[in-house]
Image 1: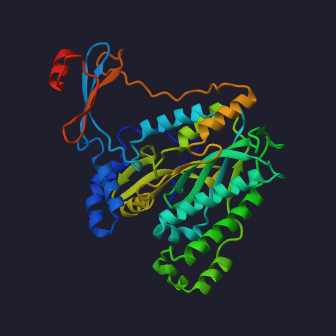
Image 2: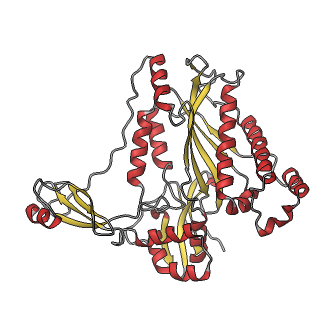
Image 3: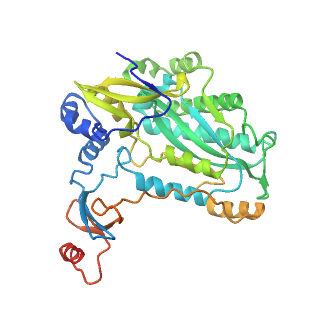
Length: 410
């Protein structure tokens, strides 16, 4: 059952009293686990989110730099699927990308898998997502190397998202691509159509489709593909080939936008899209009578924000669908920005373009004001992990333990 209650151009601010994903897990998590069979990774994600900032992962103390007021806080779980965590990791990553910016245009491209592959993705997350990264990145690199297009090695990085607005499976990769690249002599090459699209979308789509299906066929032939029950008829090799030919859509979605307005726009974009999880807490409106109401962006209606609701079991099930395999890299680098090459290549490009660095707006962490005097800033004094060990401290010289530090501070 679906309904639309409200429509907004922008996501409204979240009231403080509305529930979070952690609240929903704490209330309905145990009955859900008893009724559903979960992967160990999904169990861990649920456990971490349920206990995030509840004391299970330790505590920390903060002190006001003006009045000396002390505040005790509970540590976060730091799980990358937790909507309330990863702000620190995101900020550090954004700062690193700022240091890598060069004075050229940047394009935004998105490669999306058709929904017909959702069942295969559910049972082959590592294989299918790796293949998506591999074939979409090869497509961009091949177009860059083509002398009729650019004739150079472009630089780009990709960010995997596996969800749509209503938490349905929707695997796609966002790429930030430089408008230009390095040729065989390490000289910078600028594209002729720098003010529009970097490469033709239709051609990208056709090449990406051909590469992906070829790679999927190889994976199947090597016996690396697990077939779900609804696709068990594909165990015969001939049936699999016919399925690829007849059932897979001929047109795939490859999205491309004109270049960003400048380095500042690139920073704002990557600050929004990295380290996301399936749904943020500020999109949840209410939980009532076993239903979760939340905002979603309706891409079919000019990306307007609308509301919908799901039964709690369905909400949790869809959220857990997007748990990634252990150690899976959802942010990857290619071309002259590939790991191990980026520093040297960026230095070469800046020398070629006769610039030292790019002045972009840095994303700085928000300072927490003192709730007592409202003038000072709260500073972390020390952090204690879940086992009672001090893992980080800014204790004064001569203070051997937290008790002494607290006594001196007051």
